[in-house]
Length: 123
Length: 92
Image (cartoon, rainbow over all chains, first blue to last red):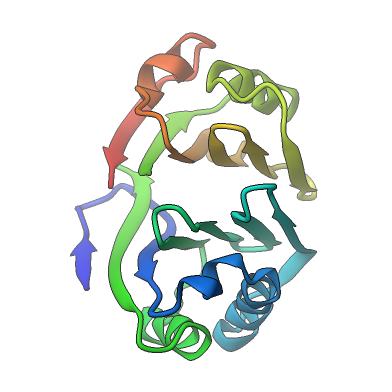
């Protein structure tokens, strides 16, 4: 995973971004799976949900979902045409990105995944 | 899809977040909002063109904005149009 870190005056948190190419394109039309991701991710990482996950599916089948956390947010967006899934997690509380990745691997097995971890804060 | 992240200087209250969403070209959409006590707001909007997540830290005078969009956009310039000074912008 690529880590983007800079000397910072004030750190607000860590942002994990993953681009996922699932082995089955049908996964990208599966809203229940996206909802599961938004529920399992905070639970696995010990983050606090402040507003229940919102998931909606557009006419073209693409799905977008978000969950607000006391520590910031997690979101997921599928692009069935492009064959991809975009997920991110921003948290002011440190978390284990390896476990976040494991949640992706569990829900979308055998996917190709590209991840980035960014330190967010005042430069 | 491009992912753009920005950190800016924040003054004022949550009403400024709506202004920012308009400046980002997302005047309408589906919102998920959480107001923190005593201050601070988390606001995610899914619009036609993508989604924006804005978190404010009024106590620190900071706001983070990140946008996932199918359009390329100069976030710093758009935020500057409403007086939010971007201190950092990066694209992924």
